Amino acid sequence: MVLTTTSWKEEGRAEGRQEGALAICLLLLESCFPSLDAEIVERLRTLTVQQLEELAVATLQFSTTQNLTDWLDTRSL
Image (cartoon, rainbow, N blue to C red; front, top):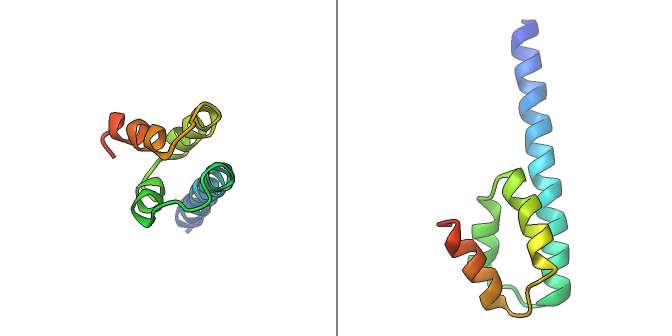
């Protein structure tokens, strides 16, 4: 029973970290590009926490949405 509870807690924490990282990336990207395409947003939702952290840093160098698309394409997403 303890193993199951711990597993659920760990899963919930991991999900929360992913959602938080996604929210930060969306805030950053939407401040630069107010009308993000729905397809791009869906691609962002598939990223891992580590990828979202990398994206947050990379976003500082993007000047167009094409930069974002290229970044996603290099990761085959």
